[in-house]
Image (tube, rainbow, N blue to C red; front, top):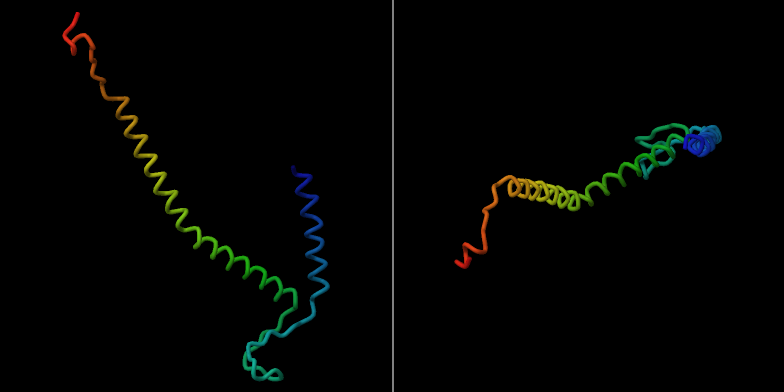
Length: 111
């Protein structure tokens, strides 16, 4: 298992390092659509920073969307877990209580 992990991780790590070195040119990110030459607000960082930041941002937005969309399923699972716990308690109490001993002969009156 460890060898397989290393065989997958090392090439991905090498690819990440290669990508970082190939895209280290400073790039300006501007939030001003009206003035491209002198924007009111802009940030400058290497291109790989912007690309990785957008990947991470997309990952976290997607994770949050999945978390909120699965809220109903989690609520139903909690409800069913409580119901199972309650039914187990009832079954346990039924096993603990003494059972009445009925005799078919006593009920019918025959010997």
